[in-house]
Length: 318
Image 1 (cartoon, rainbow, N blue to C red):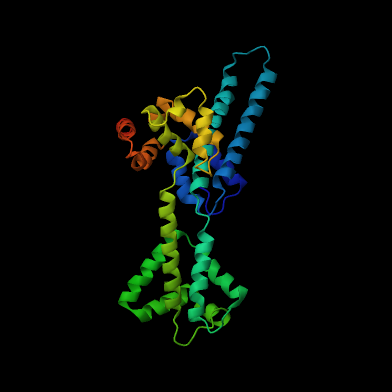
Image 2 (tube, rainbow, N blue to C red; image 1 turned 120 degrees about the vertical axis):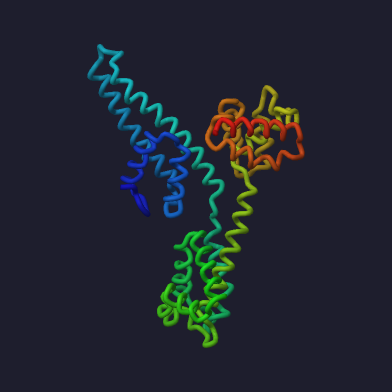
C-alpha cells in the first residue's frame, strides 16, 4: 500500500527503497511530487534522509561481509551492497538537484495572498470592524488547507452556480463552509450580505494572486538553467570570460546579478552542462532548453545551437 497524506519516517524509508529500484527516477519523482509535495513541503529533505538511512544499511552489510571474508576479496556477494551504495549515491545527487529546483521555485507568499484577501473583504461583510483573532484564524485555515488547484476548482463551481441559481449557490456555500459556525462566531454578517458573496470575493482575489505569482515564477530560472543559458552564450562567443583559464571570475560576475544563486552552485552546474552527454541525456533537459530559448533570442548563434541540441534531445526521447 502506498503512503498517503502526511508522511512519516517509515514512509520515507519505504519510498527510498522503491526509488532504488525505480526504472526512471524522473517519472517516479514527478508522481511523488504530485501525490505528496503539497502536504509535505519538506518532502525532498526527508526523502534524502530516507535514502541516507538505506545507504547506511548497505554500508553496514558491506563492512560485515568484508570482516567475515577477509581471505575472499573477490567474493561475488561483496559487490551487491557496493553496487547498491553507488546507486544510492547517484540517487542522492539527483534528489539534491530536484530539491534545489523546488526550493528556488517554491511559492512562499501563499499565506500573505490569503491573508490580504480576507483582510480586504471581511469589513465589507461584517458588522464588527475587527472580527477578532479567532474569527480570522478559522476563515484563514479554511482557505489555507486547500490547494491552489482546489481553490480554482471551488471558484469555478461558485461561478457556475452563480450563473445558474443564486439561491442554490448560497445553500452550497453555507453547507460547504459550515455556515452556522461562521455566522455565530466569526462574521456577524450584515443582513444584506451572503456567505456566497464573501467567499466568492475572497476566492477570486486568492486565485488571481496565485496566478500572478505563478507568472512571476515561470519567468525565473534555476541555477542549472542559468548555467545552460551561459554555456550557450560562451560557446558562441557571447561570453568569452567563461572560456578563460579562470572561470571562477565569471561565476562570481554572473551570480552578482543572481542573488539567490551562489557562485559555487553555478560553477557546479556549469561543469555539468559542459559535458555533452549530460546535456543531451540528462533528466528534464528538453524542458530546460525550452525554458531558456526566449532569453537566447538576442543571440542568434546561441539560439541556433540550443535549438539544434533540443532537436537531438527530443529525437533521443522518442
